Image (tube, rainbow, N blue to C red; front, side):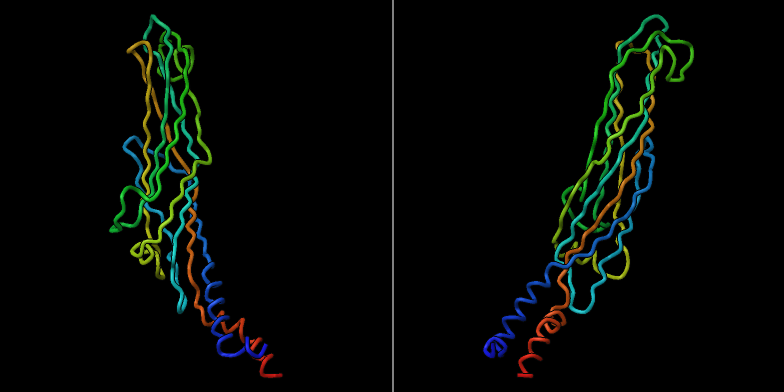
Length: 226
C-alpha cells in the first residue's frame, strides 16, 4: 500500500480521476409553444442558454433532440353543381432548426417532415363554400412525436455555445398542401401548426484537479497517519 500511495501511485490515480471527469453533462430543454404556419411560412428564433464553464471546464460535444407534434385542418369543396367527385388531400409539414447566424454548415442542423393524406367523395355543389354539407369535407390531421437528432463537436460550434448569455437558433416551418379531384371546379383550405420542445445536452470536462484531490485526499491522509 505504501508504494501505491507514493508519487507514482498518486500520478496514476490522478490520471484515472481525470478520465472519470469526462462524463459530466448539462441538459437544457426549451419549450416550443403552439405555433401556426402561415402560407408564406414561419420564421422565428429559439433562445438557448449557453454553457457557462467554471474554472478549467470546457465543452467537448453538444447533442440536440427536437421533438415535435404537428397538427392541422384541411378541407375540400366541390364547386361543380352537376357532378360528384372523388378527391385526394395531402398535407406535408416541414420544419428546420439551424445553427446561429454566422456558423457554417452544410444544410440545417435539424430537419424533419411528416405527411398525412385522405381520400373522399363530395357531392355536387350545395351553394355554400363552407367545406361541409353534401359538397364539402373537413379533416383534422396530426403527426405526433416526430423527432430529429444532431451532434456536433466542431470547435467553432462549441465556442458559439460557450459563454454567459444565450444562443439564438433560427427555426423555420412551412407546409405543402396538395388537392386533386376529378373535376376542375373545387376549393381547398389548410390550417397548419406545430408545438414541441428542443433539448440541448452539453457534454463537458470539469476542472480535473479538484475532483482528483477530493478522491485522493482521504487516501493520502490515511497513509500519513500510519
